[in-house]
Length: 215
Ligand code: MHO
Image (cartoon, rainbow, N blue to C red; front, side, top):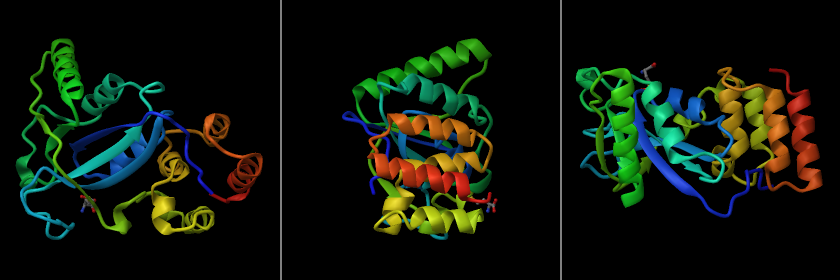
């Protein structure tokens, strides 16, 4: 099954704002956000891991449909949801505030939204805004981290997918990883399913599962 929200035009946003578990669940519930993944970016070493992160930073990457959610909306939530004003070097570069733009348009918008945020809040943002070069996906245990605290749900949903990485990459896993942190109601996820590219039977199977899982 391809239980993903459908879109013909997908863009990617990549940013760092502290421990990546939290932003994964915060951004995962937003209609228009199709995939989320956590990883490492911004450093100079190749193939970093959690224990060998070197000068990389914990980073969230999301694929989104700009017709449903705009890049400025994403960036406003980014700056509203972490402290980008204070010095964040207490753990080297692990928890820095970073923003990686994917093209000239994102670069322009990033500086505009930053300026607006500073004017509104009368504070100076320290976020490093830099061109995207590479994102290294983190180990499976860090993906959809909070959802994994519900092993029955985790197993039931993952069984719908051909591979584990299809499940980790799915819109439904992103939404449920938000739901368990109370960023979204199950009822709202169910309503949203009408806008996904599901067949009748896929929708039925998913709704039935959401109704019967004991959270
Ligand atoms: N070690 C911290 C943060 C983990 S995060 C993936 C904790 O256990 O909360 O950096």
